[in-house]
Length: 209
Image 1 (cartoon, helix red, strand yellow):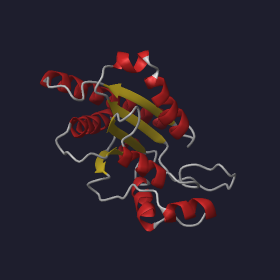
Image 2 (cartoon, one colour):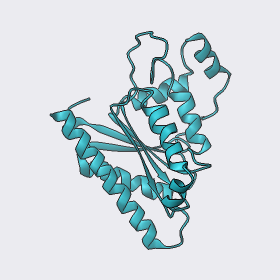
Image 3 (cartoon, rainbow, N blue to C red):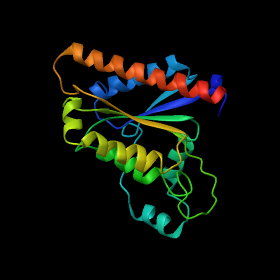
Image 4 (cartoon, rainbow, N blue to C red):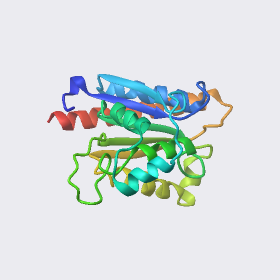
């Protein structure tokens, strides 16, 4: 999809609490994408949807033999193919994605759908705009001091999105995920909404040029 009036995005989470800081930040990201020009934004929580993030024998067999992926994986891929952009919103667990989201990536972002590392020439159908909105308990200074932010960016932007040949990607870190201060939560949500709006406006304008 390249028509701005038809552009669609999906905001992906994997959180058991529908009233969590993650869920509220995801709602803010969705508002920002709409404000920036996306015609439609869907919220998609992989836990609520019942997707199994466990990479099992069938996944391994498909990877090794190059055969068809499991039916639930293919259904998830078809769903994602309806969108131009994916925004993943997550609480930082050990400087990375929580287990369910990592498993979702492991199972869904398969060879010849998300990337081609064998020269097969397969037509890759995964969306090529991939963004990560991370929510940390500590402030950004902690992440920068110890190099965690650079490591996360290397993993998610360089190692995942760029490996897929993404047209655009980015990692955005927000703090105060476990704060008891309502104003800090509101500030994070505003910042996330503004970042998403800027992404949408910039990339949709570039696509229309």
